[in-house]
Image 1 (cartoon, rainbow, N blue to C red):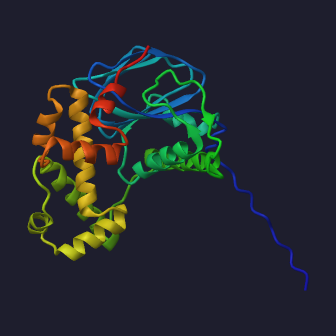
Image 2: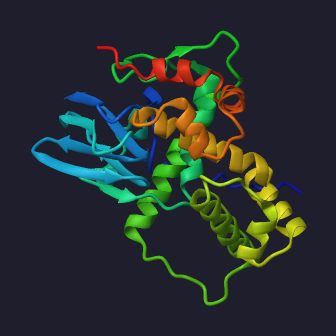
Length: 293
């Protein structure tokens, strides 16, 4: 029997045709970028600290977790604001009409959407040569051993993020009365991370965490590893090193004082752990922060 099949078109409301630049920057509190304008879109996400962003005639102070878009040909500048900021920038070409939703748009990014930024950055680092702290980057150079399909995955992650942001703009979110198991475990992981941040200047003890959160060691360890891919101890150590990087950028403490503040046994151990996680010593990291015109 002959069957006639009907092929369904798959229209795209967002089509990113080109990527211009992708970079994740870590600057000290004196960072200033005087500004630019260009004929493509730019997304900026503040991962740490605060910045002041000017776009055309409007100045905005953005804090950790906030995102802003710059439309094509919009003049924009950025500078550190009372802190040492970390921020993610991706610029791209997209002429889809749905991009009109992002004109003059800035928001606090839902935590469920932040993994898209991480995925974009992860693929970018496997696909392109991305210099550290270069706001003047104007071209991506592909790695000789780039992972297969990296460019397409970057495009897909970015388009999915933009589509979900449009949905959030045009739809009203409706919560559920009873949280799911996944939602409960997600909140539990958030509570664990908040506890680790709160106790960042103390020696991390899983037993104390269990008492605070109210769950057993094996359950907390399993849930945390399933959701983050990391052990509790490793995450806590990385959190200390992330704080150390912030303190180095702020420049108010020397390495010995930072080691003491973060409850390391001694400065030598602190330096070894820092190099293992960051890939450079504290001294090398501090030298890399120098902003080059």
